[in-house]
Length: 380
Image (cartoon, rainbow, N blue to C red; front, side, top):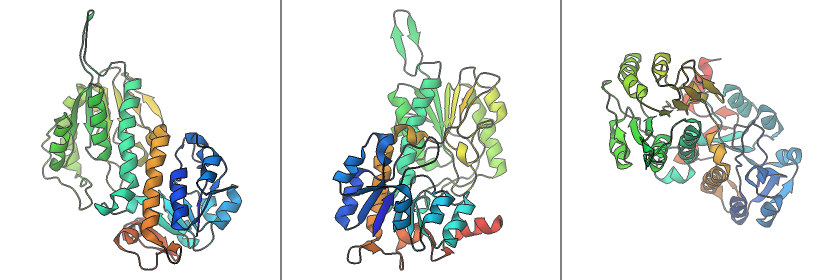
């Protein structure tokens, strides 16, 4: 079994799917490991470190042609899928609910895709949960980026020249990214408020020292997987009306609200942005899936006419690429190890268990996930 990692080609992506540490662990499993020359350059890891771990360093074309398993960070490009032989396996992000042509290409090419977005959110699968590991770093990086763009210092400071009040930070969504954003903003000394439609997270927010904002939007809750349930249009409107006052008093807003498999809900409207103070900063972590903030654009910095900076940044984990790569590479290793047949030195995909069955998106020419299949049929 030949496990391969090649350089990412998406602009701005600095993470890598395999580190020398995980390369060595794959070798100890009994796999043959190969990486593209220069794979670790973005995290300052030389080829020699991979070679010392037992990996072979080669060139992109020959590695793809020989790959049994291809590890990726970003969804593989269509030309990469075309170079893989039938029966090969990809493991990484696929963005299956929005990247329909890629899913079809994987099925047509009889390439099996282990899609990390579909890994079940169970206690045992936490060590494979790449969504959570990367979201945690995104929440941290969002606060650091916001502090860099803000015209205001985050902590309260008492000086001979006067007292500086702490920055007011409002975090919308208290999932993995939101909780890390809350913790980071508190460490920087900000006064933090947070809101989530799931009342169950109130205690977590308060345990981090933030105030939980309670809005009356009717009955809410979460799915079996722990995601927030989608609000009705009426509930969203009630949420926006009550949230407007909190936004107007905030120096920084960080939005993290996403609905699994759907476009992100619009939470901060144009009118709410217009009511914010000049110099305020909004970081929209959902920009790549439609955006929580009116006017945000994926990958761009937008300054509104009233002086509010909206950051629609979707590559925040890449801004801390070394740690993000280490966490992500460990996620992938744990996933491959879980599916590994030590005797056959191959992956057990024919009769997958709950974890592998949950994230095995395509196999033997078929799209296995019913939700993704329904999304593709709806747009056919």
